[in-house]
Image 1: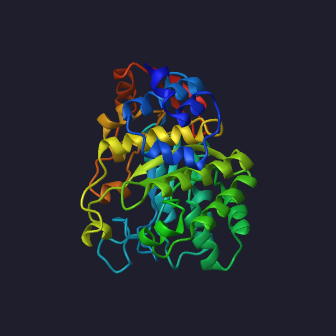
Image 2 (image 1 turned 45 degrees about the vertical axis):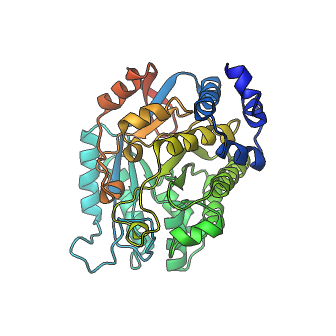
Image 3 (image 1 turned 135 degrees about the horizontal axis):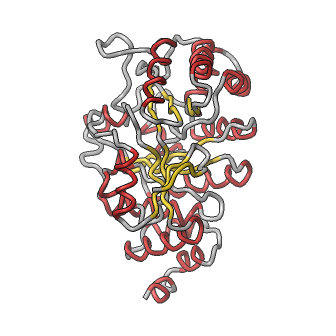
Length: 365
């Protein structure tokens, strides 16, 4: 049955044969009507690339500030600085939170924040040094390419200078946030005051070339069109061909509550589960051959749908997301224990494994 239906789609036939998919192939898959077969093909490619193991990290999320010079229409997290709930953590605050992270068993601390218009370079350097001085084994995954680009502009330094200084201070890797969607036709409608798609790509490629690996993300389920999804995946694939610096792709489902897109009526409901699964499968098929890991962000999808997405090409659950605040601001529950994630994986007949940031296996269950 799989062989017959796959032959009805040249794109699926190419994907299973290990051939790279073109833009037109991707567009065909965005409208391919047999979602189950699309998922089966993606799952087969996943099995060929990484086997039955599903990984996750013990990760502590920390947002150092919610003050932001940008005002993105798809964000419910940012504040302008004069609100009662606006905050910026001190180095002492950060050290205290990392101590909590260590007690919870986290192997990495995931640090992102708003585009604070007044923080100097030294703030970030002190943050990294304080963490490393107190917890030298803690992996620091911090600052999106969009944040780094903003800091460079704010402080009138080159992106290379910023990245070099942050690496020297203790930055290990970077998260994949701020990518949203690269195509200017859609980016200009969901992003305000943030770097362009090409600036994000240039910044992350420079980071990779300096030895700083990163994740990649793609924000879907708002006002995008199929061509914006395929354009985004191909641009990520081209960077990966040159640098091999991406560790995983995390497709991020847009969360509607409390965003400007909701308030203006531009998006009235979140994307259906069928679309979420299609994006997971197509991400796997478009990036096969260049990027082995497709992460399912259970915080955004919910645990049950995340389990299904693991059968549509996903092989990673990102992490425990201790103390995550950005999706919480949009109404999502965000904490889960190591055992809970392991049990989620066992329930679908796959093999759970805790990993480090670089996808080295630390423990199996």
